[in-house]
Image (cartoon, rainbow, N blue to C red; front, top):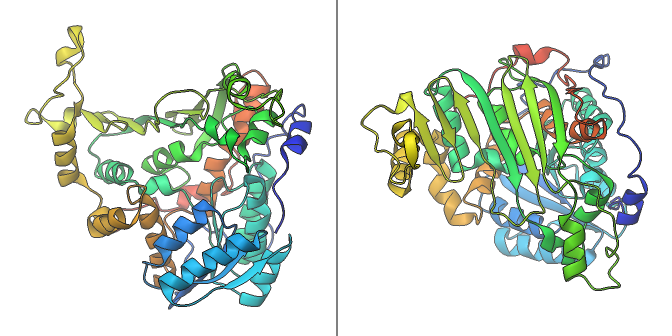
Length: 460
């Protein structure tokens, strides 16, 4: 298994300009478009996991509760971590997975010897693309933690590999399976808020404390890069509401700007020892990045990212249409579609806005929203998901749907082109910031076939 790039090595690359934007590549001869791809049904899905850490341990706990999921192999450089995970699998499932540890090629041995049906990749960001390609070339479906890759060239290589091997490659964007995200998708598909105009997405999550951790891998990216480095949690749901790259619309261009970079340096001075390796590091990445995406239909999406500032967690999750607006954090709605019978916000804004489309929100309102518009998938599996999953059920629903689709031979809820397009925001935002906010064109990873791809429906 290849190693994560050390912080010093990442910092060394900080002054190099982002590469050119490659907006179109011909499809290689013999390759097949993967939008709507269905693989042969599997009686049981034999899973392997590359990279054993906190994320993998929680995955194991959930996968053990999902019918037709069978964990057959684990791989990590750290044999102790892999052994602990194997014991957890054995305790939960009654069988012990094979272990592959100790060197950078261990995952390749696992792929050759076990021939798993699907592989979860939980390693450092810069390893995702090469490992996903290797997984598909060994005949397995690749299930990749976000992002799918960190460079445009890496994203193209992943897309080409999926088309060449005809294997699924799905980015594990769990936020799309949050209760409100599923509910908003259900409401949008019913046409309740009218024609879609605008979305707002974010990943606001104060993570400075990770600089204190023994294995701090994020700091190298903050030191070497400047853009929106983690966009998919916020933008994934908005893209699905708008059917981006699926028949209706797609991303066209992005502009991106960043604030001064101050928070990480100040935190290092205040909280880290004088001899800590991050002491004195120059962090180039803005404390908060704001990007604006324009789609082919002229819709706009604001995408923000901030893992530094002391402020509450927020993903915004706002979708605005001609008849109303849905928003998260807190969950609320407004618009003509609600009608006069809907209770108003118990805490309206002061002044002349008091009676102009107040937000419908609060605990009672939220309960009624869910009663009216909960997604069928959540109605079917939500109670079990919440009971098993510490993150509100979204991870359980993500894994349950993947296994369900592979077992039935159905198309996955997210295809490789969506994972590539959402991940492309990071390198494109870096290029835009580097050029003072100049617009950057999105690649069309589908090579025009998004126009003929069926939008994600409301799965029962």
